[in-house]
Image 1: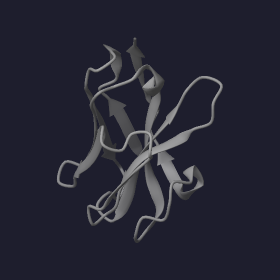
Image 2: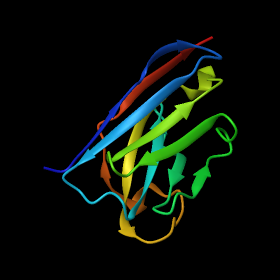
Image 3: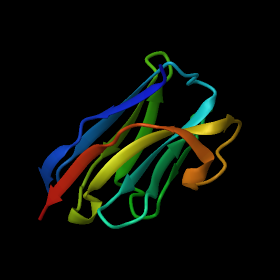
Image 4: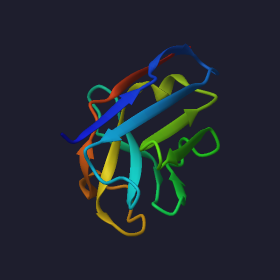
Length: 125
């Protein structure tokens, strides 16, 4: 059974940190770009960060310098370290695996085929 399971969300105050994890099972992991997206109520799902199979990282402008994406291929886990959190970071965060192997090809959600169920991050002011 293919699964991506996120964890680590919660309620924090502005300025705090959280680390999200996404554990994969039942799917090939190492050769694919993995990404984090987020979606706030009533809004579209937005790209947050990506990490290619080679370890290259890419970030949305809004999180650059505050968030760090990493991966552990042996454990099949992708992480999102979130520092200096702001109220506008409040969203459900999803991890996703790219449809195809190869280099990172952009932030379009349509380029990803496997998604987790999401984890809620709430940042109070």
